[in-house]
Image 1 (spheres, rainbow, N blue to C red):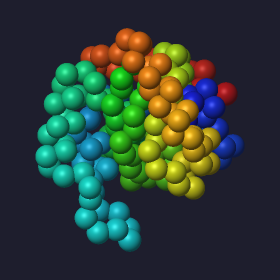
Image 2: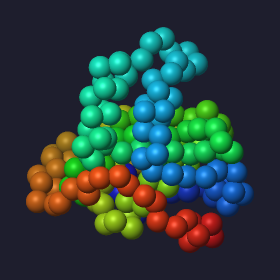
Image 3: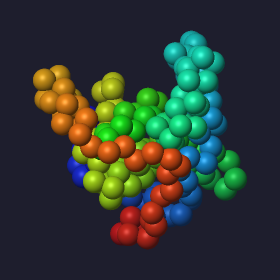
Image 4: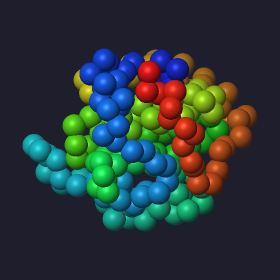
Length: 171
């Protein structure tokens, strides 16, 4: 779990973000992000992101519940993250990187935006070293379920997402 205000950006990642090598968008290439997440990765065979899942999440995207953050390097999609937004929680499904730090940049951009919108939690589902470096922590199931129950009373931010300015993120 990641509280959007608890994001940790290393000095190296901060330098990379300040360099201007990446450009960020939201909800402009949802299916391409899913395809990037479904693509084969080193040391892994197959994917859990099936064509049926892509169709279902694309429908959720069209209904305004599923969203993506895209990371561009020039005109090429370099990375991204997608998931489902309900209330003030974002349930991350998967992210990918085709360039160094692109998936970390996607998660950081998502966390900054969700913090601005007063979201309480990003559910990252599976803990790994990659996520741990960004401040993601395990949470007891009981506490997670309490947050989910409280979240039911929150309105969902539906429709296409647009990122706010990123000027303040470059310091």
